[in-house]
Length: 180
Ligand SMILES: [Zn+2]
Image 1: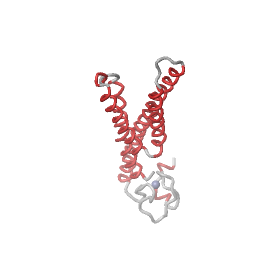
Image 2: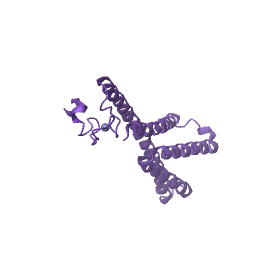
Image 3: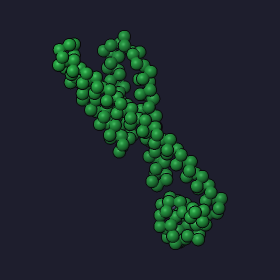
Image 4: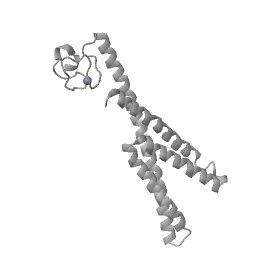
């Protein structure tokens, strides 16, 4: 209800948009920038603009969530393969301890990047993306015949991570603009 009240009537009270206490003399809310003493048109434009930014932020957050999960899933899959190798080694089939020893740290790195992503998405996704590309290059160099193995999944991983990088930059910019 208060949202629709004329802001000039609430001059000494809270900003109708972000609920911050605003000084009566202020023309703009010093937190969100709402034109408290602007015309109705200016106020409507401000709200429209803010809503558009909110929607953009929601979409970018969804992409960030996908990129974070991609890092966790890569880490988990490599971890499962490493444990599988460990199991095969114990049962003295054709398991390979060497492979397990090299795979486990890679698995931990991706899971760690997934956690880091929640605090600092941009550097975390950039590291994850670079590391993933490096591993793929090594993989293709070691077994060139397997270049197209799982290509669809690999393209999805690359797509999610690139989307995440773009979204990380966008959320930072939007948060700054919206003073969140
Ligand atoms: Zn405000």
